[in-house]
Structures are given as structure tokens and as C-alpha cells.
Amino acid sequence: WVSYFEIVKLSGGVPVEVPTSVETDFKITPAQLEAAITPKTKMMWFSSPCNPSGSVYNREELTALSKVLEKYPNIIVVADEIYEHINFSGTFCSIGSIPGMLEKTVTVNGLAKAFAMTGYRIGYIGGPEFIAKACTKIQGQVTSGANSVAQRAAITAVDADPSVLHEMVAAFKSRRDLVVGLLKEIPGIKINVPEGAFYVFPDVSSFFGKTLKGTEIKDANDVSMYLLAEACVATVTGDAFGNPDCIRFSYATSEDQLIEALKRIKDALAG
Image (cartoon, rainbow, N blue to C red):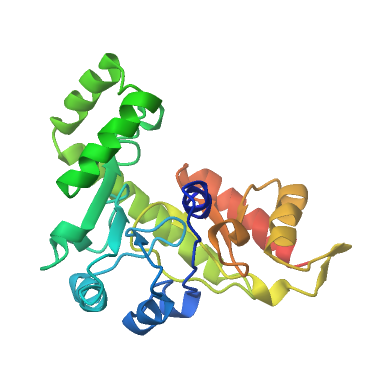
């Protein structure tokens, strides 16, 4: 997510990026994790399902990463699981559920995505008691807690029939399949198949150095701005997420709009 880097900086830390790519489904390997750790490492920020790539780590992959983290008892994992329920890969697995990880994982979640309650600002953490107490102190001075109306709405949401969630996830999966299929028809686009969330993160680096309809394309930001101007389709440059070869766009809209958007993108990138 775009704010991870800045949150670390605001906290006085130095963010260290572990690069991934479309070829690896935007997932890190145990070797990459090990190589990124230094004596100064305090925290690992982790996300599954991931925004922007839609990558979802399975239990075997999480176990392999945990084997590395076991060597470093002072490293806390902050696991962003806000897209937990928007998961097309089957059973969701939290890194905190891996043996040995419970006491070193802070799980961050909320109602914004699964229950379409972004405006209610209801979230929560689960983690070691000393961290929960510290978070409570900060919350008491910064937000003073969630408002009572939003809390009652949250209770209604989590008590609702889970079939509502199943219908929503099925709709997102259908849209994902549509978008991925249409993107694969565009020459020069490389894309993974997202297993969660509601974004696609295609690699557009093949267009760098080209001129499209009089517009010179140097990087992903140029692609995003070109698509906005030429196709009236809004995307987010991958630079914001730490990957300068990609752009992100959401498929949280109707299939008709997605079909039209992808048609415009295809026409624009054809030059």
C-alpha cells in the first residue's frame, strides 16, 4: 500500500524494500527476506491478500518465511489482512497462525473492504499485549476511539449472514477473470492472476521508450498520465507501491464499465 513507506518514516524508521515482479507473482522468497534483514531491523510489514498485486500467500509459503523470522526474535511482523475475505484462492491463512509466529505478529484488519464500510473507519489489531496497550495509549490521544454509531453498524455487519460476503467475492472473481482476460489480449502487457483484493497490477515496462500518439513514454507514471489523458481511465503508477514497472487499477465497478475501460486502454496503447 502506498502509505507503508511514509508510516515507517514518520515513526523514525528507515524502510527497506524487498523487490518483487510479475514473474514471481509479486511474492518474496525466504532468501530475499533473509538478505534484507540487518541488525537494525525491527519490523516486517507484510500484506496478504496484497494491494496492489492481489497476491495471496499460502500456508507453505508463510511457513517458509516464518522459518527465517524465527532466527530473529526481536523482529515484529505487522500483517495487513484487510482483504482477508476477498480471497479467491480458497482458505485464508494468516501468518500469525503459523507455529511460532503468534507472539511476534500484529494482525491489522477492519471492516472497510469485506463489508464495504470504508467511510465508517472501523479497524482493529490483534497482537502481543504490550503492543496492544501501547496502541491503546496512542489511540486515546489521537482518535479517542470509534464513534458509537459506526460501532453499532459494525456489529450488524459481522453478525450478518456470511452468504452476502460469498456473493460479493463471487462477483469480484468474475470481474477479475474478465479484466485479466482482456489485459492478456493487449500486446506488451504482462500480468499475474490476482488471487485476492480487487486490483490488477500489470507490468507496462515494454512501453517505456516508445512514443504513443505523440506522447513520449519514459516510465509507469507517463503511462498512467497518458491513459488518463488519452483514454480517460484513471490508474495509479507503480512507483507509489515500490514497483516502477507497473500500474494499478481497480475492478471494483461494473463489468460494462470494465469492458469499456479495457477497450479504451487497448486502443490507447496501440498508439
